[in-house]
Length: 246
Ligand SMILES: [Ca+2]
Ligand SMILES: [Ca+2]
Image 1 (cartoon, helix red, strand yellow):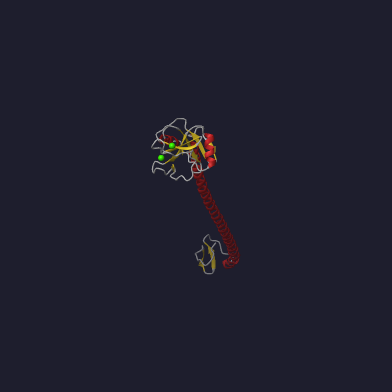
Image 2: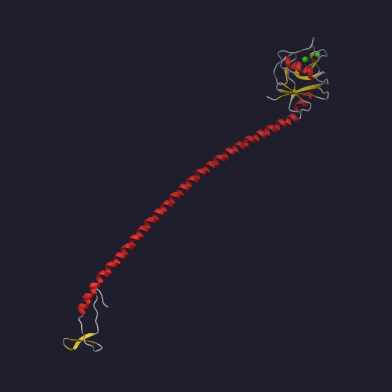
């Protein structure tokens, strides 16, 4: 079957008798080909129209699929971007929280070290007594004034500084014997200073003291009568004080 505008030889000729058309097998042509060709053409047109319609529907379906695919991709991208933003915010919050925890941890470590230091200091004060804001303890051995002061400082304290009558009365009760206190006039005779460098203003001297009775008496002790100056090389017990606010 030949279609369209293409032309080709067929096995039909009237070379023997003009006007009598015969096929190459010798049979005579009985019906006209033009009628058949017209029929063929009339059938071809509807076939072309149906094919185009199918092709058009396929194209539309492909376009719809493409649009749907694009929408799906866009949705996926939006979801992913949103997820990434949320994760970033969450990470930043965790980093901030981690920094806060690290800071709190450092503070706790400092507090722990301070408490440990305080505990060590207190552990050095055997037989200590707490009064007002200070710990007091009395040395067990008799030493000169310098050695007595060293005994106190090695235990995180110093020789006592008596600030008022209440404290003096407390010391009189605490100690039943003579004990060195943190008062001396070694630098300038007659100018009594405490171990923290402050100058004595009001003292609780015993009657006739200080008197430099034995020549050079530059260190002070307290007994049942009050304070008295004694040679710093004499040996007595001592009373140490550790103020917890210092
Ligand atoms: Ca003196
Ligand atoms: Ca004296």
